[in-house]
Image (cartoon, rainbow, N blue to C red):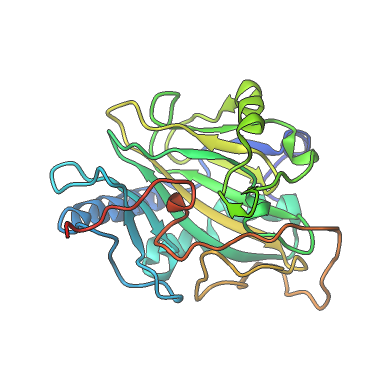
Length: 293
């Protein structure tokens, strides 16, 4: 291992997540924060999802229904590494990538990235789910790196996780035939009872296994909560469902070499319904801001 120590490696595989401070350099963090500030200001001029479209034609920037010019509620930027040098640099070459390689490498490829943003007063919540149910692969050597763009505490909508849940089953995100994007209500109640908050200073990262149960509450504070979320897989993990957030960089090898063979370790896998809207928040019942008719 190049970046993590053995105790960190063991903690990740025991708990399904790992918090690490100072995961990017101060200049990298400052550049990411400056881009966010600019995008928030740009969002004030829009009353519905906007921006240069993703490669599947969806708006890149999404806002909650509470969004206004006076009180922006920008909540999602899809694949910012497609449009920002600062975000592309971190996606490709930050310490976070070396940490992921320590966990599932040496051969690692990029799947997708996004920013989940909860500005002051935003009503955005994330229902409990496991990422693997959205992005199933032939094996589960998949790590999500959630980089803290702000100081995050228990009041501004922090990520909450269920330690050890990555070792259990992948729970359904369907209610009958309807894809809800979240686990059933009783499963969420159980998850909330066992969950712990992931808090820390801007520049910290939460490395999360793809099968870890997690969610987050709304921002109840005056402080912004931003996460830059990059998903990486072992090079021999091959998607068995369409990427919900396709990118020009999808499948790019970021460490090591590409795989000649796919490694198969999964059995029966429920296939997700991919969102056609600007973000998955609409799937879990939180509509986007729309212009008045």
